[in-house]
Structures are given as structure tokens and as C-alpha cells.
Image (tube, rainbow, N blue to C red; front, side, top):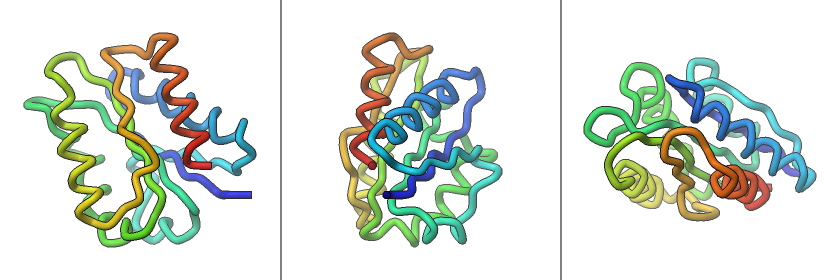
Length: 140
């Protein structure tokens, strides 16, 4: 059984809802899942998991949240090499540039992205929920 971490930051609850769907998909695929907020997760936890889903909404000029999420993620980057990773997040404007930049960063760090990042405009609709569940299953 694979062990999956779902790590997220959410300002409005949209990315938190996505995190729950990613976790549900991984559980349905037989994985053991632990959900963390960005404040609860640190690089020393990375080795305890076979795969990690990171979730963060787009902020400002299409960037990761800078107060909690980005510092935590940057601290984890040195442990991304060879790790199965999935990315997800919500946005209210723009075209998803933050997700493409984030994917490029992960690839540059040697991460094994299991799929394209899942993005939802505002709250996840039924397609977004299905995409989040599929991401969880891909990680498992």
C-alpha cells in the first residue's frame, strides 16, 4: 500500500475542497493518505511518503501563496528528485501561468509529475472534482 501526503494552503476553501477530493481518490485506489496544511508540513516528513500532492491557489500576479506555502515548498524542493508529485490549486483570474511555472520548477528539481497540474476556476465543479480524484488515484 502506498502512503500519500496531501499538503495544501487555502484562503477561501476552494483549494481545501480540492485537497479533500485528491485524498478521496488516493484512498479509493487503496493508498494510505495523510492530509496536512502547509503550516503542518516540513521537508523532514517527505521521506515518510511514497508520493505527495501539493495544493496552492494562484495569488497576486499568478504566484504561489508567499506567507506559508511558498517557504514550505521551497524548503521541500531539495527532496523532490525522484519523488512522485501531483500539483493542484484554484484560481480566480489569469490563465494558469502559476501552475505551468510550478510544474517547470518541479521538473527542474527532478520530480516525477504523475499528471498535469489540476486547476479549478474558483470552487471545483464536477469536472474539477473528477480531475482531483484522478490525480489522487494517479499518485496511488
